[in-house]
Length: 205
Image (cartoon, rainbow, N blue to C red; front, side, top):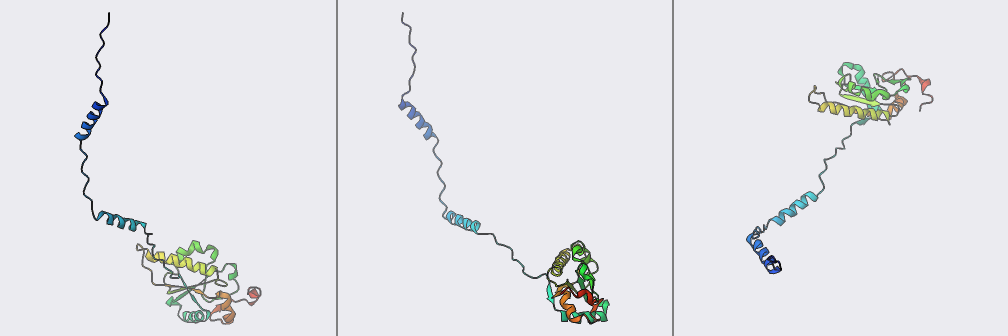
């Protein structure tokens, strides 16, 4: 006895393609937007804008301090001695152990070894009201200029601090040649040099 064979409906490749085409055509592709004639120009401008290096802020080469020669300082010391209450000039000697043996008359000794720790106190304290602050060491090549720079930077920061009392204008100077050059000419002038010990200078210069 032969069993009946079930009927299976076979789809040919033609039917498959026809079905796929009907699905594809039932959802037509949206039309592309009209071209913008200015789009290319804007893109070019954006590329040029972001390809340029960023502008660097202008750098200031204004020195933190200036130099004063020994003759000018000697004359200033004489005038200051006549009326010390005027607070025209303050002389800061940052020599360390070599401070002994003589100094400019009226100079304050603030050793360089500790200067960075006390610079803020000097800005707001004893040097606050002076019109000029003059720094020096033995030769004014390292310690003196360094201290002057530290003080000038601290002073500028203090002047920019609006939360504190406004500081008066002040000029920061460095004695050219240091005390070595100054005493070489004025060591016997008691009006500008004090506590000078000739014997202690035999091996310094």
